[in-house]
Every structure is written in C-alpha cells, then in structure tokens.
Image (cartoon, rainbow, N blue to C red):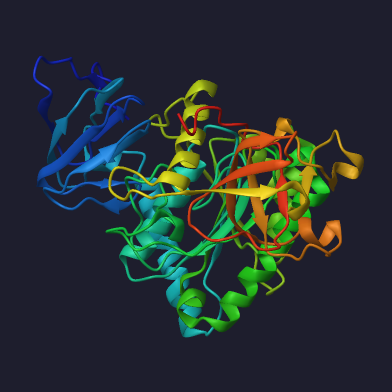
Length: 448
C-alpha cells in the first residue's frame, strides 16, 4: 500500500519539457502518454521495467496513447521528455508493499513448476489469466511472459480477447511463441509482426484467427470453435518443440465477471481445451468462486489438478474510456499498414474488379451470420481479413481458416465495379477470400 498520508504523488507540470523523475526501490511512475505528441523516456540511472520488460539504460523509449507504469526494484532516475496527460509517483514504504510482488511471487512458483515438469519430462504449466474488464489481465499476462523470457524461456502466449489484438488487429484471436524480448514501445504492448518491417526487437510470428466481433458472447459457438482450433495448434507446438514445452502456455482472456453464466461457460471451455492447470483470477472474487465450484475436483486431460489463484487488482490499473480505446485501435491499424516512427512502411494501393474478389460478411444482418457479399460502397474504410482458404471452399471452411493478413478498403466505385485496397506489402491478393467483420469499426481517416 502507499505511504500513509501520501498516496500517489502527482508530478507538477514544469516549464521545461525535460525533467527527471526519481524513484526509490519498489516505487512506480505511472503515466498517460498523449495521443497527439510523443513522450520519450530514458533510464539514466538504476534499473527499471515496463510490464516485466527490462528497459535498457540511456535508451530512448517513445510512447503515444499509452497508459502504463515504470517499476523499479532497486531504484532509478527517469528522464522524461515531453508532456503527459497525467502522471504520478506511487510510493511504498518498502519494496515488499508493492502489489507487483504478487506477480513476482507467482512467476517464481511457475518457474518451480517448470523445473519440476522438466525433470519429470512433463509439460510446463498452462496458465490462464481471467477477471472482469479493466482489472489488469493483459498486463499480468504480459508481465508473466516477460519474466519467463528474461530467464531464457520460450512461453507460448495466447490472446483470446477479440476486443484487443495481440500481434494482430482487434477482432482476432492469436497465439505466438515469445522466444525473445517484447517491444515495450509497441502500440499493443506486445511487439511487431513481419508486416511491421525491420525492427530493433525481433518480430514474432503469430497464428491468427479472425473472429470479427468485439464480444465472445455475440457468437459463442463460433468463438468456441476458434478457441478449439487455437488449442489444437498450441498442443501440436508443445508436442514438437521441447523449448516451448519446458516454458508452458500463458492465455489472456476476455473480461468476465462471475455474474455472466455464458462468460463463465466460455472460460470453462477454454480451460478444458487448453488443459489449463493454473487459473489466475484478478480482482474478481465472484468469478474465482464460480470457477472453483466447477474445477476444484476436476483434473486436466493430462491428469493434473487445476489450481485457482485469486490476486488483488493493482491500484495502478489505469481507466481506459471508449474514446481512448478507439484511438488505440486506430493506432494499431495505422501501425499495421504504415509502421511507426522507428520503422516506416510503404503500403500499396491495389485496384481490383468486383468479379475477381470473393468477399464474405460476418454479421448478424446476413443469413446465418456469414454469407457471400457483393462489393458495395458500404465497405469503404473497413478492414478485411485475408483468409488462408480457397475461393471455392465452403463458407464454414473459409470462416474457420487462419488469417494471412489484412487489407483496408480505401474506395469503392460501384459504377465502374472497381475496388481499391490498401495492403501493407506489394503483390496481388491472388484468390484468397476476404472476410468483412464488425470489429474493429471503420477507420475513416486512415489515408488522411
């Protein structure tokens, strides 16, 4: 907890754009980086980390539209260049009082489980992070993965929250092995993909499925199907890659409170499909109780008991309103096609005939929720998923296929029956079908 009488110490605006923030051991600097201008920080002395990623000394890190925190265990000084929308220092009487210790201790316990599994030639722990919305689930999953990677592990991380993407656009579910450090500057907090171009941080190679909606509860049967597809791929990777098998799996999930019976059912499906043996519930006691009822006496498909751990929500979890999250989604889309300040891409606009494209729409307004769609002006400003299927494949096959990439519809000429598509790299689309979902929403100003 914070030092009595102090709480969080707000940083006062200064005339100079550059300032030094001094942190004692166990303290945090919490900040809201603006959307319109960059915020640049450097660790000028001591050591510090962001979401478990150790920040290199005197290296400049640039943030936009970020709400995060810098944690130090030994103490540090941070050079801050630029304005913040808000920032504060979270002081603690001793490092042991920082709630971040809960994740550090959990990491140590998981490492012990990994070591025991390696000795017995078993799979390392499969961890699922759950909780209500805005409890810090993704930060916790990212931190646990970062700690594992820093110790030489190669955890397989799975994102099952379609509201936000991991190494992909929102609306998708994805999985990737993290054998190298994450990119703390990335818009999604995880890192870059091959479409992001050259990077100082090695890019990741995710397996992606397109759900195309924000809430799993919207189409629960299809969501279950995609989760099962990912689980099958994860199981195959664990069986063929000893390094990943020794590191285990970390699954980030959608926001679920204990009052949503369907939400709990979907979590239960994930736990069963991924053979989860450690469930971490953050700041949601009712959900912990509901999951405990279902799994206290149940074993995984590998014959292991399922441990359910309840952690408190950190007081450092930032509130992210709808306007902020929309800006983050737009930033993810823009970064996918154009790169960022460190690596600029040159996306290509391709013009295609209506008749040369196979487009499906995933929406409640079409038959069976998924149907072939003729090109129309309504498609402008939407992002389509390119599927790894053929044009003659059945609709159900197309929909459940993995994703090759994404294109943006910049213009539709109904009179000439032409459509212009923005792609992150040059080259024709070939005969891959496209899927038009309802999430993320249209990005009106992508091309300015």
